[in-house]
Image (cartoon, rainbow, N blue to C red; front, side):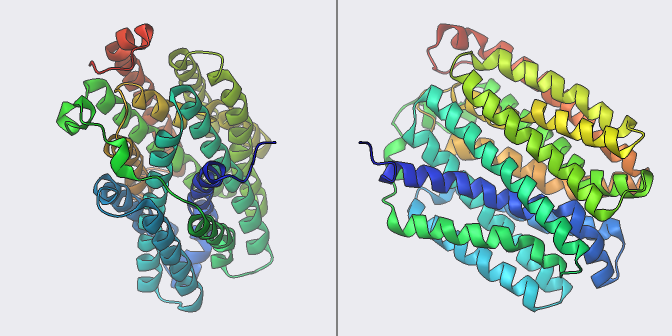
Length: 399
């Protein structure tokens, strides 16, 4: 009888939980921005923009990940990241000061960025090309599940007048679980997954299609974060919904993603990635239009659910496709792709808040549609450049 609690399975589960924790901290953004604005007597746009510290921290963490795994063991990085996350959440709850809030958000973001990169590197190390795509999709399922749970819990907590930082309790608890796994597991060395070949010639040595995939991920994240950052406020202000009702709308997005990712999990084991990516990307782009044209809360809820179904699996299939564009992707290349997601996540609160301030909340959702259109265009060009290698199944370099 196979040991389901073996070292590889425990490490893989820890990778899934890393994405759960990241989502648990960033998903309630649109729900807690209002209470934060009230607490610190600032505008809602300033409160939302304050999460730039969290997302910039993610960016810094993913940038650091491009180098740190060459000198520090994965296990050490994972455990240290959890310690920083837990201390920062504690500081947010116990010290009611804006500087403490922004500093703690930055540290949480940096730690999450490192944890995400470590998880992606481990999955690239432990699984072959087809299973790698499936495992990366499962990380998205955990991200979506955390989005459903964290936004639902946050909505209930805020409705019952708990402090807004209680929205982060779920992320705090699961982060501790990651540390427990890391302490008891044997992690592989990152030195062994850096072959002495063309893969490691550096950023300039990678094919153009790799960079296009990176930029596609960047625009995807800008659009996605803009959606769940502003849909709650759009629902409350334009459609007259309550905080609890708006949190339910956001949770529908992540519920749809969770279901969509499970569907995609089975599809990637049977079908090639390229047509799946294009089909999901086109449908997701179309569904973003429904968000800023909805006239009722019911329509918005349905739109978010269908968008989640279409978006489910898109993020990780794009990353997985990017790793097939070179042979034996190194930790640096995997971290490079994740870095683009960090950039997108980092700049979105500031950019979207600026759009809302200059135009309207609806304009921020329209901006998300534009970002998705750009993502589709970049994916199409990347697939054209890398298509010959994809069709031959060689996985080598071209571009």
